Length: 358
Image 1 (cartoon, rainbow, N blue to C red):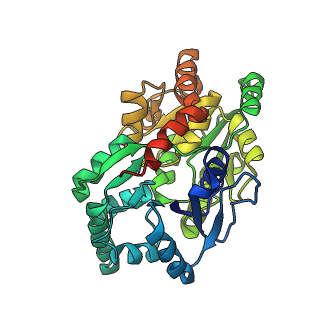
Image 2 (tube, rainbow, N blue to C red):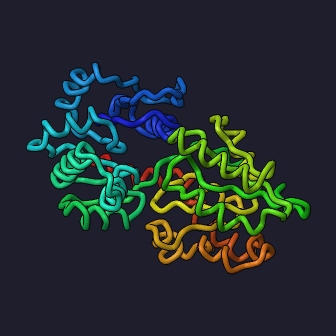
């Protein structure tokens, strides 16, 4: 039996369905850390799961003791820190899947002069946990390099990709129907209301196009509420009605339809983030802009040879150059990201993660 614990999100919903569809349901049990917004849907294909609250820690502990492996999908929650801290000398069955924010918090703590003592203590405990973790799951090989650099980990790493529930027929129809609207260029900026999106810096780069016929969609449905309001206010001040803040969660079909309409996607994120959005948009044929100082650029451009462009170059180019997406780039990107929805490719990865011998 493998016990999983994961935050409630669309990724959790897709992962639970993936487990129930392609693995024996008796071999996996998932605890979902409840959030205000519920994303996990009841489905006949789901593997067994339940919502996790702090009071469930004792039941979780009993199951974990009997389990062959405990996989923690993202180390964010205080209760998990406490539980792992009391198991530091018995970590042989623990696997931690790095989600990005649980790693890059270290960089933020180093750079932030106002770091609280509490945050420093949590990072110290995080380091103790990581050093004793025998196996990590990473969707970015470069993030494992940072783990070794920042926390001096000794555990090995397996490359994984989380499954995404995507209607491939819908995607192919969207690509076939997509055409460059000569009257309007649709831009998507960022993926959430988190400071790592660096929205304001991106606004300043895009400001020179404010008089062009554009629409800027800005997904802000989760993250920091105060930061979200700042982004909306600044976006409206610069771009007026051309700026559209997406503050509510959309149904997957609606969100896919929005992404299919995007001509240019700008991700000024200063860390690994927005992987699902990037994959979908690149596959759909949007022109892609990322920062060149992140692990995503390292993997997608330097190693993957994707047809992506550097965000900072926006400052040096015309609107026509900014919005034009070559067929060569579109073909390269679709080829690279098509594997993300190949079930056999995904299953081979997760088979390795689920092997009994860590």
